[in-house]
Image (tube, rainbow, N blue to C red):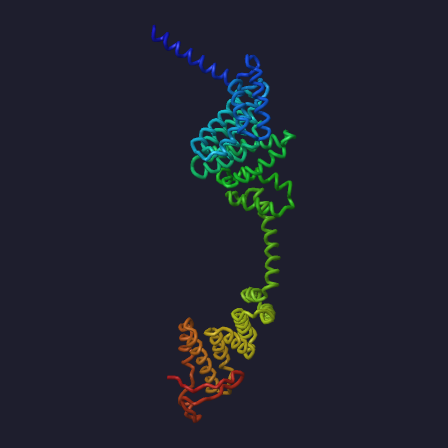
Length: 463
């Protein structure tokens, strides 16, 4: 029985102690015997606080605060001014132990203000979050708890200053596996609901809530695609799209974002965006390509060549050559353009002399390049049957072709295989020794290839 009584007594004393503490914390000067002295200290410290002379204010504030934390019960100055005074101390000291002490006092003063002045709750909790995040550098876990407290306690009255700290912490914790997607998503949705309510209903601070929403959502954008699904983004984008149907930039952003979120092209809204997107992008790309080709006719010529539009390609190469010669004159580009022209003139239009001249020009512009000589060799080989009045004369063109292949591989080792293969192929068509004997010419003699080729070759015969 004695033990039970002792326990009951302990509980009673504990409750009484708590009540005394709570009452003392919210004590006013109204009925205190030294009220005049407290009010005098209050007036004096307030003057110094207004002048931001916090060191001079401290002793007067301390006297007023310790005697009557809640001042006259109508004004929460002893708490809010205490925060200012201790924040000044916090910023001035370099002693980490002192910083911790002052930080704890600042947070305690905010908590006391909320308890003694419930009407200040939304503002005080918001400012507590602000100071913990921006000034006191409190651990994220503690600041997050303060953010949760501010939102839960104030609801739609939550201060906009809570938005950015809460968003930053949520993003950080989600990215570091300290918060799951569901919690991050709930924070996002809750804060946006509060912002939207105040943008619509809070005339005095609507602009601040709008700015706060934009800022926090810029931060949330880092994880938005990880915490929301396709349906969320469709619901978010469609009203914006309908309100701005002529904005191509929004259209591109919405479509690309929905694709990134895995939205199906079969969805009616996504399909609608896709059709418009592809039309717009196609037109833009055509315009960009046309502008690029106007400045780079050589590249246009290459594209036309690959498309089989050879006459148009020739015209572009001729224009590109003129442009290069007017400017710095890039020999490498010029060599390419002349080679393309030679290939077209030879293979498409049978303009052998012009093709050979352009191939020779290409070779002069790029030393050690065997391809132009391979092309000339092909010209000689392909026209051998029409060069000469008889088989022997026609076979002289084969020698000229083999000479070009041999020269090509002698200056360009990358052509060894291709040139060797063609030399082996056309060696079977060299002149016969017996025919040469009848003409009274010998191996090693020089002869001129007839027709357009006109080259001098040294005779050799089939083996």
